[in-house]
Length: 181
Image 1 (cartoon, helix red, strand yellow):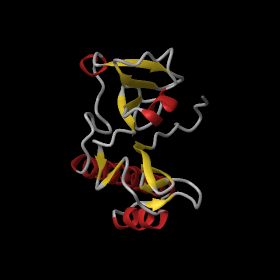
Image 2 (cartoon, helix red, strand yellow):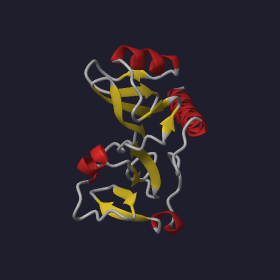
Image 3 (cartoon, rainbow, N blue to C red):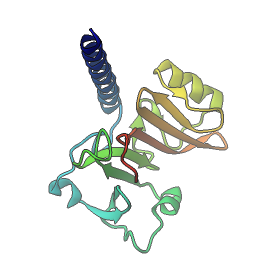
């Protein structure tokens, strides 16, 4: 009987984990249908993709930036405040120990890019952004951030004086239990 209970619990956990992952991937698919990034979240990154970018390395993540930007002479985060730019973070998925290279975060300051009906340069109040994001199923992560969450997918909307200055989408990556980084 004890063995049967353990098996039932194990199967339940596996099913629950699979359902969450499927829901996350459906949310990502919907974002892809309602945005116009060159590459989408969870795109498998191949040499064909990386050949179009300069690569900025980091611990467990590589950032793909415009081929015209020297990653060693420019701070990409400062650069994008005054230059329309999109960059892609590449990691493993669904957790850091899995291996593989997937786009797991996209950030943009390019007004030509949209996520749903939001673009850099649009004017909104924080309340309007919260209401709009909630209508899409994304809820504020906390009361002071610009992060809206649905399952393991985040949308970031950065406002400055009521104007969107940067947008981003991200899928949460996990660590396996017992693995320390």
